[in-house]
Structures are given as C-alpha cells and as structure tokens.
Image (cartoon, rainbow, N blue to C red; front, side):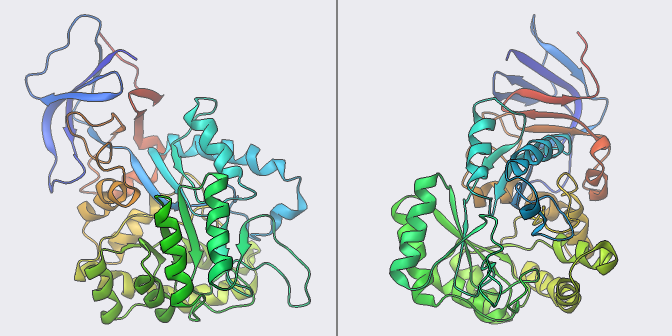
Length: 413
C-alpha cells in the first residue's frame, strides 16, 4: 500500500452534525495522514477525484449471522452438507464489502465456522470486513437457542450451546473463548423464530448472567444478550452485559438503568420488518410471522423511548434471519429514522458509536488523522438521505485499512 489522495470530497467524520465540505484526505499505508483544504499530492500519490461526493467511515453492523442464509426456514441448513455454510458465507462477506461495511460483529455462528471465517479474512485469504465473532450462543434448556423438539429430536445445526446453572454456564463461556470467540452471546429471553418460547418470557437467572459476565471478563471478553422481554432485559442489564440485542419490550425504569450502566442497545428493527413483509407466503413458519406482528409496533416505540432518553444505540440488523439479506443491512438506518432517530444519529450508530461498542474506537469508526483508513466514498449526502446507503451502487469505493476492496471510479494522476 502506497499513498492515495481523496481530492475534493465532503467528509462525514462519524461525529459531526454537518459535512466538512471541499476538503482532501490523504491516506498513507493503512492510516489517514492528513485532512484539509491545502493537502497536495506528492510524487507517486494516487489521486481519486471525489467531485463533491461524501467520504465517510466504513459502516459497522454489530449484529449479524454470517453463517445463516436468510432463508424462510432458519433450519433449512440441516438439509444441506454443513460445508455449504462456509461457501455461502464467503459470498455474503463479499456482499458486505460491496455495501460499504468494513466491520461486523457476528452474534452466533455454526460449528465455529465464524471463527474460521474471521481468520481467513484477517490472513487475506478471502475478501471481507473484519469480524468479531461469538462462536455458539449460550441458551438455557428450552430457551431461544434450544433446537430440540418437545419429543427430544435435535434440530440443532451447531448454532448454540445449552447450559443450566452457574457452573455449567461458566464452562460454556470457557468453551467459546477456547474456540476463539471475541464476544459471548447469551439468550435471556425467548424469541420470534424459536418455536417453543415467547419473546416476553425471561431466561437465565441474574445469578447465572452475573457468572457469565464475570467469567468472560476474566478473559478480557464482554457479553451481549439476546433480550426482548422486559424482565429478561432487566436481568441482563443488572447482570452486567455490555449490550442488549433487540430490546423489544422496554420501560422507563430499565431504560434509565441502561443509561446509568452504559449498556448499549442494538435494536435490529430489520428482523421483524423482513418477516412481516414476506410472511407465510414467503415460507416463514406461522408462529414466526405471528410473533413478529405482535412485537413490531412496541419494538419501534421502545426504540424511540430509549433513543430520546439518551441510551447509546449501535446499529445491528440480525442479518441472516429470514429475508434479512446480507448486504442489505443499511436498510436498518432508514428504519431507525422512520422510528424517530435523527439521520445523523443513525449514521453515528453505524460508525463511531458502533466502534465504541466493539472496543475499536481508538482505531476506526471516524475519519480522523491517525486512524485506520476504513473509508467509503458515497454518491450523495447520507445526512440528508440515509436511504442512499441501502443501495450498494451508491457506494463507489470501499477501503479497509488502506486497501481498496471496491472501486467503481478508478483513479487519476
């Protein structure tokens, strides 16, 4: 990697309310070296003429499932050779790059294929965003991650680890870390797509959650909780998790606790939205459509209350769930705006705030001198219309750590 100058661009830096207009950004090696109006290219510098387009941080999705294929039936993978999971996932990672994503947090893989994919990306073997992975999500017996039928037949495709009681959940945490997990994912409520439980019902006791968080912390890891119902959200927050995933049923008390404890909300509005849009006509099980319809409106209201109260919100989509396609993740930004969020705050949720949650804000998530050059060049102004990011054709260039992974413009001298 040499040097590249983005000439005449408008910069969204990941924090500011307005674009910094008509500047140049010099990237040398893997870092942003200079930002200003007086930056001139030196000999050997590749120049890309921005012509007033928007340069901004690479997008970050804090809740994806790269090993799931967005099929109507989430258990469809059991009817294929398991190796197909990896083959499909490589294709999905390419879609993420084309859509402008440079970092992803995977919240539940299959048979630790997510760990292998992370290593392959980091070693330059395949094209993709940097990955933060969680291995198998940890669920109680009969919980959101339990894929046994009531009569004892397993439909588990290697997606979850069932554990009950303090010592068993501690062991489950240790297993995920041994396998290479960066995060620990747990389920403290039921869910929409699990057939035998209810999103409003709590799972895992506070004592079990505290044991999980404590054990993860001893190994430098943090915990994210699938938590939809109020009591399960409250238990997760009091148990010490770093982020609440979904957060469908919230009240003012738990919102205040999230604020006080610095717990992030990752709302994933895309997941029920996609299920409702495609419905049973698309092949989604009846129970999944019914539960999605039951929760969508209250989900939007809870999101807005948390946002207006000042809870830290990081973008996540649950991509990989039915019809929630990999590469279409920026649709979440529009859903957040439709639910009451300012467009610039939605952009922050997918850049600087997401980087804070992932613990990489010192390296990326903003356009600043000295930061890693995770950058995308966008046709249009996303502060005025976040919807432009939903179309990958508007993402003209993608750079991760100074390496151009996509470029539909070319460069001049």
